[in-house]
Length: 236
Image (tube, helix red, strand yellow):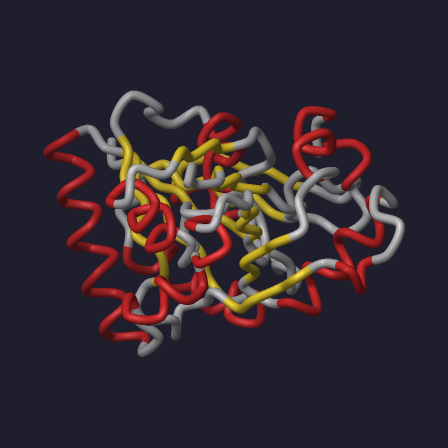
């Protein structure tokens, strides 16, 4: 029996933007799908309802694929694919497999010679890099920095040294309620000449993207809102 296809379905990164940032290609790919792996089923159902492309969300089959999912669970989760049905993976926010646990399902698909189709959609990481003015030829995404301030400061300095040696832009994210704490730590830990970009609530009508040297950040402090934010810096 021929296997199905694994579709990587992008999600919005700012509320209410689905009709502006989700391409027609994604909508067309979604219409025939009935099986989905979702990081959060409730969020996925709400997102699909907002797209208004399914007669009934209740007829769709959702299974959870999140950071707690083990590789041993994949054969069961991917069973519809092996039986010839297409499956869509949807992230909680942005693109599956990018700062997202969906990568293990994609790896399983490749190992079992299952066709994988990534679909175009918003990625806060790439959008922030595009708008930062920092080096887009060499960059690295580091996920979350340590929570404890002292450990975070040490990590920041380590990444700044790496940035200087490799001319590499360093990207990372933070839980919204810790945005201001991280910004303060970055300003204290980085050298005055290092360029820091803060990209907030991208694709929304309230998006902000500010990029300038640390010296200027110290002169013009900013109170960040509790929104999805990407931080980038490049040593000079």
